[in-house]
Image (tube, rainbow over all chains, first blue to last red; front, side, top):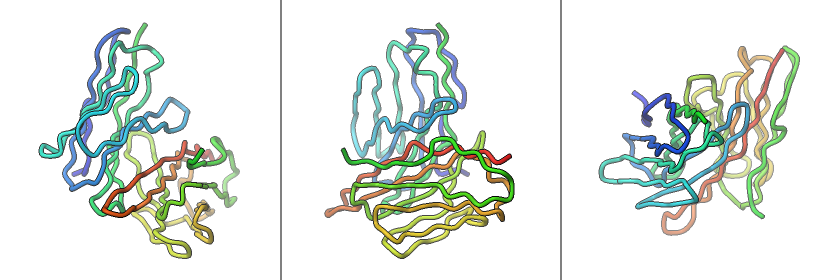
Length: 109
Length: 115
């Protein structure tokens, strides 16, 4: 069983839709990261969370430490949001990362 | 600006050749990591280093080598012993501060294709 589970694996949305990607984890963590990976491209770090909620533009990330769950929301989705979104958690000691397998998002114009 | 830099972004090599991927950070981070990503799989740990001149094998270290001669640099060499080297490689670094506060940065990644 993976330490980090993401859902859904694949997601197709119409432009403008509100999108939610979920991440559940089973280990104690010091922080959770949301990463974005464009096709053929590199990794962009979107958020680092240890509690509560963060917002950057149309992106919102939340974390519930008690439930070991985080969500990434995209408001007013756009085709340029099409990418793989990866959830990564950092262990309590900070010495290790665990990664989800990613959610592949396609936003159709 | 402080950050972590991987180079190059894309790399092509002939089968049987060793190749070294660069990872540099100017964040004064203590720990650095190398991960590998294959299609449909999560990132897997190759090697990590907590301090200079020390490094540890991760889950898939076979066919790889690293060095940590300087705090800022953690190069990864993909040797000819690595059976399936074509993959996406990601470097990360972590600062463990006082009071348990930490910060982590990720490189952009290097996509290696062996032909």
